[in-house]
Length: 88
Image 1 (cartoon, rainbow, N blue to C red):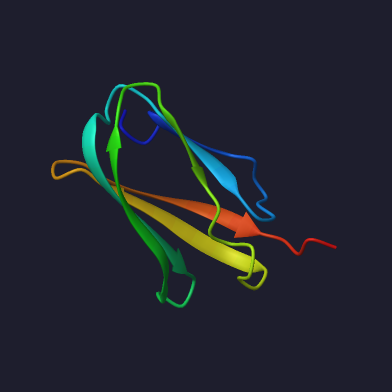
Image 2: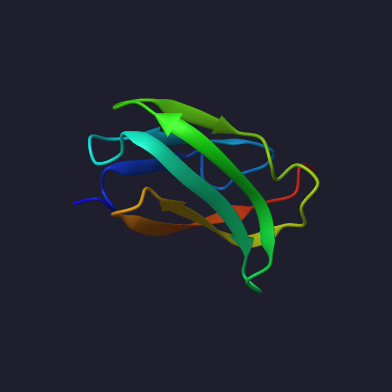
C-alpha cells in the first residue's frame, strides 16, 4: 500500500513535478532524485502532512532521460520512476 500512497505527476516531466502524499507519509521525509546511472541529482528534507502536495523544481537543467524519485521516512522506503523530456 505505501507505493500507491504516493503519486507523482505530471509524467513525463519537463521542469517541475508534484509529489502527492497519502496517509502512509506524515512527518519528516528524505527525498532524493537519482539519474539512471545512480548519480544523485537532488535531495531535500521535508516535513509532510497527510494529503500534502510537494512541488519539486529540480530537473529543469537536467538532461532528458529516466530518473528515480526515492522517499524515506524511517520506516518506509519507496522508489518510483519518472521520465524527463526536453522543454522543446
